[in-house]
Length: 121
Image (tube, rainbow, N blue to C red; front, side, top):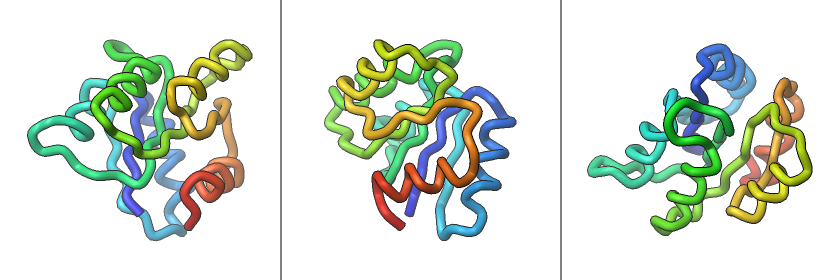
């Protein structure tokens, strides 16, 4: 399984990597929405089985990346990882094409469970 992890926090990247160590995963990590869109739609675009997408990042936000990816025909499942917990935020993310929504901070068990529910292992 190939996963794109998009977050401006290196600490989150380290935690996600640790959570997925026991799984057979090709984990690609980028620090911005712009880098994510380049991986998804750029000249050297790659195909992913899942996208883990932070909400708040400098430049393009997670929701902006999600909308642009969907407009470009990218149907890869997306799990939003965010500290935003308002019902309107959750609804907006799901309406814009997110498959799941995980609140930060999260546990290894929760991350693995949500990934399994979205794409299976």
